Length: 134
Picture 1: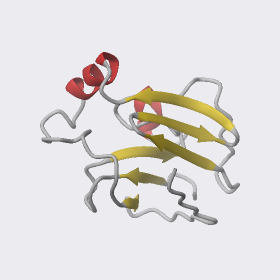
Picture 2: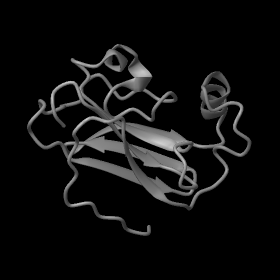
Picture 3: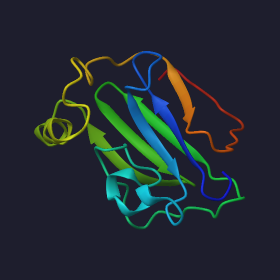
Picture 4: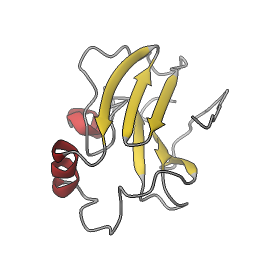
């Protein structure tokens, strides 16, 4: 990422930007960095990453990993687990009900689909992207 850039890697059940998002963000320089569920490593809008994450500064590579099996999801950053969640639980249903996704029918129902890399007009780089069926 370049300074002041925002980019999102999105796991989505279709090719729109209406799926689960692994947030990639310069927390210090972007306004979204002030909102816990919008910070780097978050399940955007739904689950905040733990506070002890090790985010490398802009200009250095960060390594992200997303694990999704059945209803269980995990977000990793630079070798450390940031968060985990279970779809279909009361906690996740409550988070979805309070989020911008609440009006999207079937938002959390699909478990397979496309992976989309999204940016908002800023310069961003990805390398060594690997996808495995688990």
